[in-house]
Length: 293
Image 1: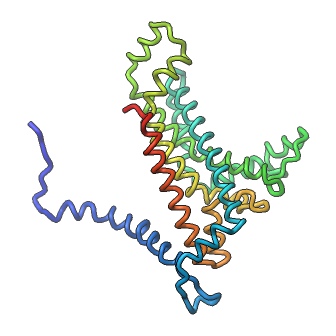
Image 2: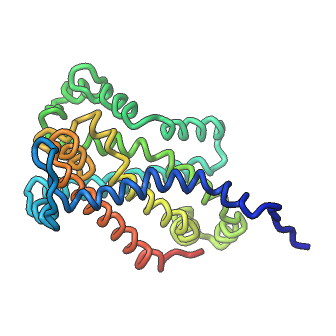
Image 3: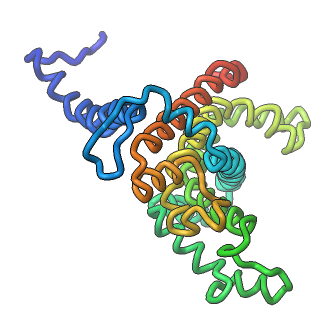
């Protein structure tokens, strides 16, 4: 006998969904529409007159060398964060899935970083790698490494990648661990009986069965690297030194809030949104073919 939920009032289902729909409309669709409208407009320096310029803002943005540099930095930063965060989360999940002493405490401690705000996570890494007061920063200088992320662009990029990846590792760890625990133990035991080594069992059985989880986390991490890393970069380097860590999302904020170029900033946000949508569509089009459900 199938039990179905029956609502005595036709209006009740819509009332239950209305709060979530209101949040999506107010915080996503409305700002997105405003950005698209603003991207084809240009204001005078005093904000008193607005003129329609069609695609001129997009043409200016896409030919700006500083924007192209931000695009290059974003690609490097995003690839590094995605690889480091996902590989670390998978490694920790595989370790936590084993029968080890204190596994509950181990798993709890690994979940905590996800609850830390991006600015707080950046402050923690700042105190660790600061060349004057940081423990590892001072150690690197003692070992002969001229570490100074405030002056060296490569050092700054390494620092923001580490901080952003550390913030996301816990999220990846949770889903990878759930995926590992959903794999039937009989398959792994059968492979062991057949003489498969631990490495063979992982790459031939476990990892293919984790492909739905990996595919989901790949999409989430792409969105995270492009959008949710603003707080880390702002608290650590503010896009410097010399725009070495200025990503697309940070340049949108700089041009819109600091330089008050609302048209150009809106055009950049539209381009960024289209880039992320394109990457997500490509992942669904080509990568999902290798996912085993």
